[in-house]
Image 1 (cartoon, rainbow, N blue to C red):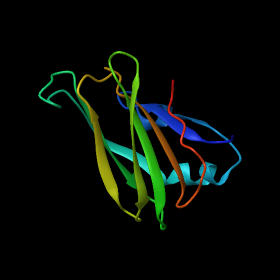
Image 2 (image 1 turned 90 degrees about the horizontal axis):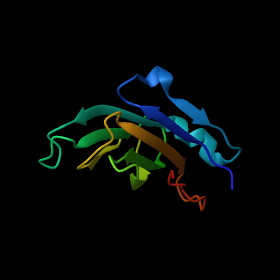
Image 3 (image 1 turned 120 degrees about the vertical axis):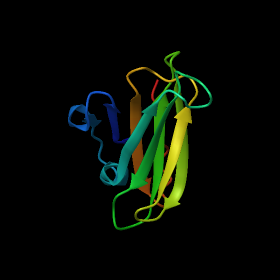
Image 4 (image 1 turned 30 degrees about the horizontal axis):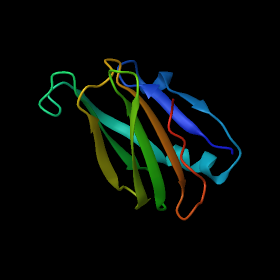
Length: 119
């Protein structure tokens, strides 16, 4: 299976995000998923919570997959299917990684390619 994901650490900067590259239609769509509006603390009534918003920045619908790293090292992920251009959603964890580590992935609407959850 080929895929592409973007990973980053919100506290450092988007410039330090890195990319793993594959050779499928998924590889192009990950460029369409953007994370923004990170918050740490006061999420889920917890001082250690983390939240982010993700949006489709391309001019066509995509399926978005997004993950936040939890304080225990595991990942919490969500999916939004058929996200229109400019469409957004939020994702949060009640006990987040202090570095606000995240993973973004995208694919063509209707694709059978599976999203990969980080380990």
